[in-house]
Length: 247
Image (cartoon, rainbow, N blue to C red; front, side, top):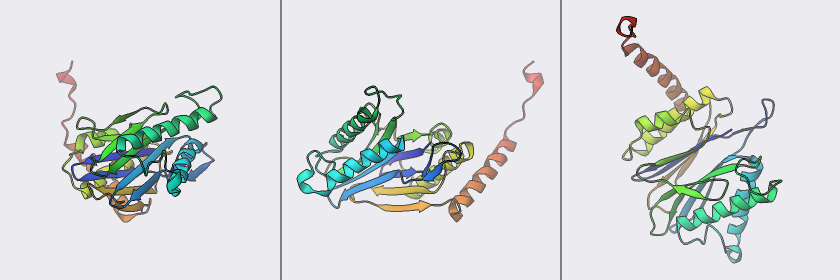
């Protein structure tokens, strides 16, 4: 399983993904699920993946190969004229890879299922974030839905919904996502550090700060322990249930 989040802020975007993959309890590996492309001053693109590892690696490899030679950039994410075109190309590539490997045509519930998050900015266009489905179609983040999750989403979603603000700083956003990931990790063994992070500053048109948070990272441990303590303290402050009020 996987957990990836793309979060839109007024001044940029924050991407975070775990690195655990597994094909059973005795076959656990670490793979990077976040990839970035850039032409400084022209575009920056980030893709995160969840689902069948062979499928997602094939999609990333195809996109990477097409971006190496200028003559081969048609179609290519480094020559697309907008983030919408980038999302269209990535969706088409994902659909083709699944269809090629599936035994009976294209099926969203096949063993080769995968979903992608694609975010970034091209030229004078706005920063944009897309969720791409196995069928190749996609939806875009907006004011009503300012973030997307893929993979094991249910445990960390309530935390983001309660605390997210579009005006929050990058530091606050990272703290929020660390809490979301910690809650997911506590509830599901198929999600695990290290966590990859990319912070994109709006209109910079270049890859921003990228780093990895390990399980023994002092900040991660402090937030994890502090969040557990804060929850217990908050629980004790809530009013006790009274049977007489409900009988």
